[in-house]
Length: 151
Image 1: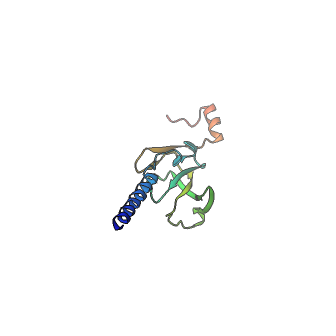
Image 2: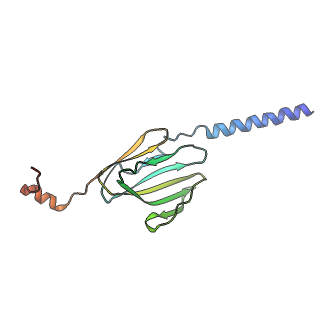
Image 3: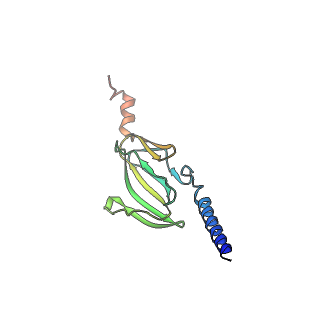
């Protein structure tokens, strides 16, 4: 009888281990639903959002190349179960806690300088946002009269 209980308990342990591994082993960090950028081209002063899924089990990390200071993070929205859970306005100095649970995160950026901002993941490609300078109305007149050209 003790052997039967030992065998049943060991089978229960193996089955639970395999079910946990199959449920969490198929996570794809590169899935477009897990990491995407709302716009690939913006002008200085416009906003765009970066969406990503954060999970304690996933092991994925998302970063932005901020060395050139081309973009500034202004708002962070945290979504759980398809609803807005928390929102942080960084312009007001609100602090951001760590996220341990599974959630979707929306980071809203504002383009500060022209260039290419690079958003990348730890184990798959990168997403680029091209930031163009804002054209001024005076530029059309200057071009029409041939003014402002560099020699």
